[in-house]
Each structure stands twice: as structure tokens, then as C-alpha cells.
Length: 87
Image 1 (tube, helix red, strand yellow):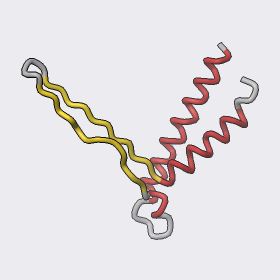
Image 2 (image 1 turned 90 degrees about the vertical axis):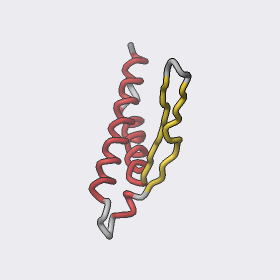
Image 3 (image 1 turned 45 degrees about the horizontal axis):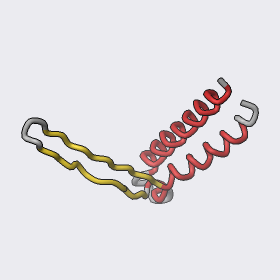
């Protein structure tokens, strides 16, 4: 049960950092003095379609990371390390 708590806390803090960073980037986009927080790159591949005559499926994966997400993920990892020492 102890390992489950640590894993759940880690996943929670990581998702919170990712979502908070995306929200901050969305808010800062277009502002001249904090617009650099919204700068980011996309990594992955677009849709790849496979047609086997009987079945057709598409696969795609795209990950976009921005500066604000990097900062908030780092902050979330620090908070996780400080709060979850005794879990």
C-alpha cells in the first residue's frame, strides 16, 4: 500500500504540473512580456493510415512541450520530493 501511495502522488503531481503549465502557456500566449513562456515544440508523427482491405486504422502521436510546462513540471517534482518523503 505504501508503494501505491507514492506512485499515485507522483502521477498526481506530474499531471498537475503538465496541466498547470499548459494553462499558463495558454494565458501567456500573445502577451509581449511573457509570450516566451508559450514557446514550444511538437514532437511525434502525424496520422499513419494502414489499410488491410478488411480493416483500416490510423495511428498518430504528437507531444507538445512548452517552456511553462518545463518550469511547472520541475516545480511539481520538487514539491513531490518535499511532501512525499514519509509516504
